[in-house]
Length: 400
Image (cartoon, rainbow, N blue to C red; front, side, top):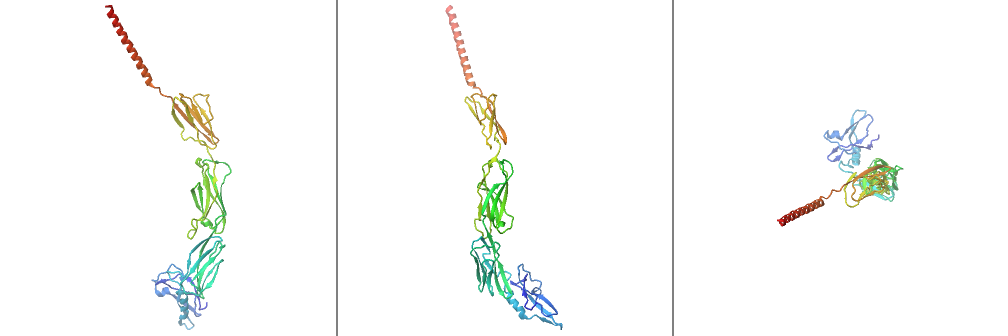
């Protein structure tokens, strides 16, 4: 290799806030070469930095045929040092992108600014769309009026010298809201209470999938939120799934799904989203009474027994009463006054049945009237006896 050499990126030694640079693969003479780096020169106490930087060979000595050592010309080492060593420090970045991350809708305008405070020979942008020619400035803007590249990775560069170029990539997230979102049930028959079913959310032409979150709604309540585990950045179709076990309370419930792009830092707020039209679920279930026994007291008036119960489809009712020839196919049954006993109602449809018992307790007799009549009778008998005794006494006196 020529004595001009190349500046290559390696792990720096950090010392006094200055990155130490390495000029590698520069070989002088034809016999052999010996290298000593700044780390050895400065001693083992020099810590290694975790950053990447350009590092420099402090000495390149060669041995000629006469076995004499000669130092690499200081002009050569100084040229690399002036071009590379002063470029970076361990605590600064020569290129600053503002913003560092761009989130943009497909076919929408996008831009970012590149700036530096490092002396250079020119600055520019490289990109499939909107490249910017090199210019002798410290600030340069990348701009496109309609971004149509899905995986675009523009970078800003500065030419420090003819042999070294520093560059920094701009993170660009291009997104697209889906063309359509629809929801359906992966089942053709009736939906029966307590059975497991699968809801399908069909999302058409969305990007990027890695930022997709599918939200499931019952009415206005979110019942599930499922992030995508796919990494596609170009528009794709997505079929999301959700398992449900409907209950009777879900009859007539409206389910919907929403495709939401959570684009994180720099993304629009609220997140871009598209929601499906609601899907109404018709749940079939058997009748079930909340109370299987109801007790009533006999009265002097007609009693109405109500056996109404929810079911889908509506149930058919039958009654069993103390009088065997009484039947009814209605939910309401009327019991004449002063009748007691057990009345059983059965509600039934094709998915099951439920029985409810009405017990009418006989009316207890009123003892007040009985004691009043008895008291009146006893009083009358007492009066009659007293009158009889008096009349007998008067008759006896008259005979004397």
